Length: 448
Image 1 (tube, rainbow, N blue to C red):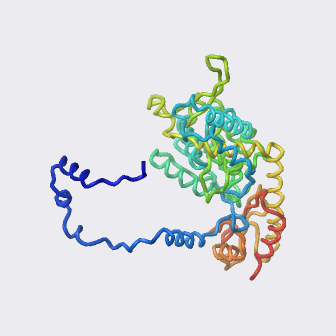
Image 2: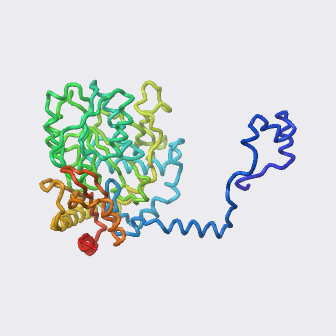
Image 3: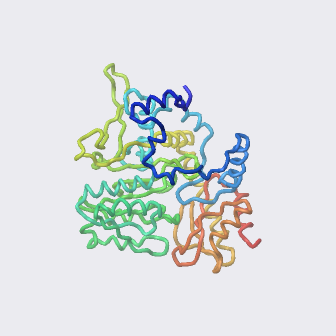
């Protein structure tokens, strides 16, 4: 069957007869004639070769991260994706519908989700992880919704250095719920954790910290965890860079109740910013409040290993009054990509990638800080693989990004008014960057 089957004159006659009109004009008689009169002002169409040539011309005006040496990050990173990842993730036993509606007949999909959940719990140290979320922002919003149900407070304290997109999603979610979103104080490019004093916690449902934060800086998560100990303390939500966990302390070790993040940095291609997979992991006491679905492992009637959907806390599966979220699905394919990439690299490979990122980022930061007028936004702060620099006075950050693109480098993300004022750049260095590319970046950062 073709994609579109046109109605024949006889088809149209029968339809009009059923409706009770004798002509198409009679059918549309209620539409004013002045609206119907005349041809539409649409140019003549192009031929197929002309259309393809026009589209190629327009596409050639784009410059992607693969056309430039990428030093941009801000949540999406040019990380190592082993070549075998695509081939494995594309195998037919995994290539199923995005949601396993007839779950137990989709053993390949369920196993892939189970492996992802297992990997995330081992990485974060948390007790349980769900099948994934749409993205990190969605995961964060759902974590705050979890906290609203688990605690009686009506305030949420959040770091001033949360990813701006995540902050906008939080604003959208919390406003109709009547929750108050309040920023903790800042100290340079770090969160001032004195804002977590016990006398301020009385009506706080959740505390949200990002580690590393939006400027790449590592926060003092142990100090935050110590301030948020106790059964009646606010829910401690840690938004983490999953790749950093090969080097830095996992969320469970510093007392986080919920860990969320983006699985892209574990080995999902950048793909112009998506799709990605959100990560949601928590302590076991929050198991029945976790959004989405959780796959479990058991045995079938014959005693064979069988995967099954164990928890589905949405109104489609349980009574609406008991649903914790209206999240309908998970990002199975991209979660599988992250799992496969991470498995191919192994623990040592992930640690090596993280170490290379950190070493190269610190080397580039030192080189850029040696350029006259350029300085680190917070020179005393520790960072992982991303850092912010302040540009010389009078220099436009967007102009620098454009100029560097002409020189073959995606220089970073332009920052308007970073901590301390002025204009700056958020620069990321992943394991994919070579020392020659780093040297080239520094040399081309000077005057033309």
